[in-house]
Length: 376
Ligand SMILES: *Cc1c(COP(=O)(O)O)cnc(C)c1O
Image (cartoon, rainbow, N blue to C red; front, side, top):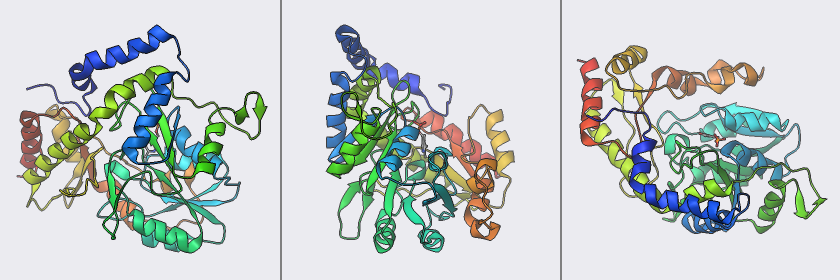
């Protein structure tokens, strides 16, 4: 059996090596390392793929979030509501801009931001909501947008983990996660669903004015050469990373399907086990693209299961072991433990199994057998 890895970028690369190499070679041949034609080409292809008017490429997914918030003109003291259960980057940029992060609980079922939690957290200072499409599953954007509209708030989607996922609305329409809010962000970190071979990110918006603002902010606040109208940053997607992404974007749907196939096999093996709550897979709407395959372990020792799997050479991980409201950097006297019953429980129950585009049946069977063996 091939060695099981949490993420197998090497096997994925081997299958598209010529395409990627040729694409990178083109950059080397033309020596346009910054803002080369590859970046523009990627921007256009991604706009088309996402069905969004504007893609603004930038240096990484954390910058993308920060720049999105700068572009919306959020000011120190403005409150920004986000999920307690996410990667720290989401809340980090809020704090960095001296906005006030307000963490709220998530839903047990989809692990995404709780709509009830958002409603309870809104104050007169609230300016924005940042839903995160965690682990590849689209958040309930229809409900988020409705609350935002009611209270006149901006919505910034952190789509670092769910590129390609669809959000389905009750009128039957489908939209790509990341393109529904006023602005959205993503990351091309190598292990993300669309990963480059270094750092990369992008911002999405359908708003022409905001897009223009954002394009200036990523480039030192310049709209005309050496005229700095606003305080900006230096956040560029470099041409070599764009070349890698140009080679990989055509495979994104295939990659996401491979993840869904693996997830389906995992979940069907775990069906009926009372200690395992496995993520469901919707066959029609692609609302979950399985950046991670995350189980909840019920009435059993999650950490002992981890040790059991690691001893068998099966990598696994806890995303995330500590709720953000308990992280030293993000504690706030306004929080009460009773406000976070779900995240406080999730951090003790979750375990993520290997998930990537190259898992084969033999590996999946070994992993599921090993998990089930633990509960015998
Ligand atoms: C990866 C990630 C980010 C940050 O992306 P980088 O490209 O690593 O800066 C932000 N939010 C979430 C939820 C992520 O998973």
